[in-house]
Amino acid sequence: MTTPLLRSAGLGVTASVNTTVGAPGPTAVFSTTRLPDAAGCETLLRRAYPRLRRQSGFSKAIFVAPGPDGRFLGRFLQLTGAAETMFGVAHAGRDCVNSTVAAYSAIAADATATIVNADTGLVVAVSPSLCSGSVDVEVRPATPVRPADVVLATPGCPGVLAVRVNNPYVLLDANVVGLSARELLGLTGPADPVLLRPVTDAVAQVQAQLGLPAGGDLPKLAVLAAGDRDTIAARTIYHGRWHPGLPLTGAITFLTAALVPRAPWYHRDVLLHGLRLRTPAGDIRVSTGTDQGALTSYHIPAREVTRDVAPSFI
Image 1 (cartoon, rainbow, N blue to C red):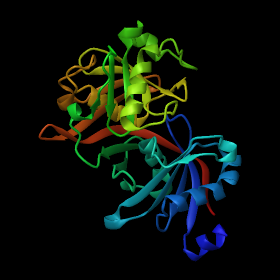
Image 2 (image 1 turned 90 degrees about the vertical axis):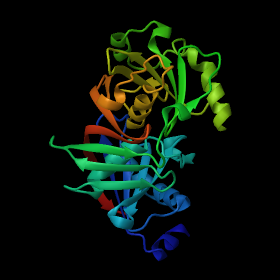
Image 3 (image 1 turned 45 degrees about the horizontal axis):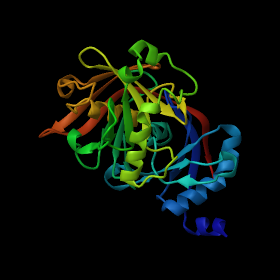
Image 4 (image 1 turned 45 degrees about the vertical axis):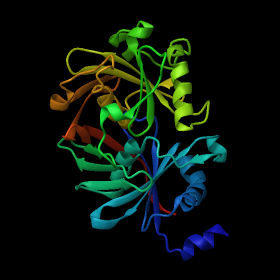
C-alpha cells in the first residue's frame, strides 16, 4: 500500500552511496524533488535498502531536496539495530556533518551546496576545495554557541568534561588513564573497557540529564591529549571501537571544549588561530567565526568524498 502512496505524492527519488574520507562507513544519499516527513523517509529507506545494501554496506542515510533561496533541506536517519532486518531506524541526525559532505557529490558539482537539517536547524555549507576531489566545510549551528553554556554537569568525575554542541559528548583527559598523545593515536580495534572506566559515572549522569536511554550510543565518547599551544590529539569511540579518523561533529565539539577554561586542554588563543586536531587519519585544523564571544560557525578544510554506488532511480 505504501508504493501507490509514494507514486501519488510525485516523489522522484535518486539513490547513491557515498563515503567521506575518515568516516567509519558510507552514507546512502537520497535526492528527492521535495523532502518527505520522517515517516516517509523511513518508508523510502526500507524500500531501497535491500538493493543498495547488496552493492555497498551503509549505516547512515540522508534525504536531500531543494529548499528556499537555493539551499537544500536534509533529513538524517541512522540504522540503530540489526542492519539486515532494518530494526530501529532513528531520526537523530547522528554524524550529520559527515553525511552532508557525503551528499555533496550527489547534489552539486563545482558550486557551494548549503544543506539545512530540517529537524535541528544546523546548516552545513560544502564548497569545492583547491585540492582536487576535496571539499571545504562550514558548519553553522542553529543558534550561536557559548562554550560555558554547553557544558553538562558531571560532579565527582575528575579529568572529564561533558558538552553538548550537536551530539552530546563525554570527553576524557588522556592523562587520567596514563596515555601520551602518541600512544592515544596508535590505538586500534576495540576500546578497552578498563581504560574507559573513569567516564562510566559521567555517561550515566549525562544520560539522566538529557533523558537518553541507558546503554544507548549517546553520549559519544572521546579521549583527548593536550599538546603544545593550539594542538590536541583526539580519538573518538564508535560502536565500541576506536574511530579510524575524526567525526566532523567531534571536531566541532573539541574546538568548543578547548574554549572552556576549566578543561584540561583549554587553549585561549583558539578563537584567533583555530585548533589543530591530530588524528590517525592526519591533522585537521578547525577554525571558528564569532560574534560577541559566541561561536557562530566552524570551518573544516579539505575533506575528500568518493562515490561507491552510482545514482539510480528508485
